[in-house]
Image (cartoon, rainbow, N blue to C red):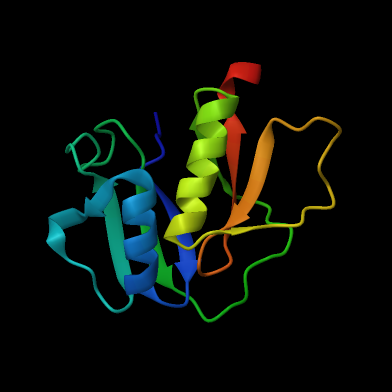
Length: 130
């Protein structure tokens, strides 16, 4: 049976993206190496260092293409409740994320759309509402 080993994001600046996502998720470069074109980030606690070992790895690869304004694939980051969601959104904005003026929000959304420094969009979800 197959398992997801890594989620891969295209980025313009691998080092900048590794710094953002490392701080955002508490991840570190696998093997301590951040290349110019590629890095795989794993949980700092070691729970995702090998494919199938637990937590999903996040791989960042240099890309020359522009991010999609309405991405077909994106990350959903789960917060415990509305207060945790608000705190995490502010923390991520402090790390360099930007709020997205999302015209597709439903009435009373349980998610906030942000974009990383490379303009990859992702959501912070209030998981208590699921």
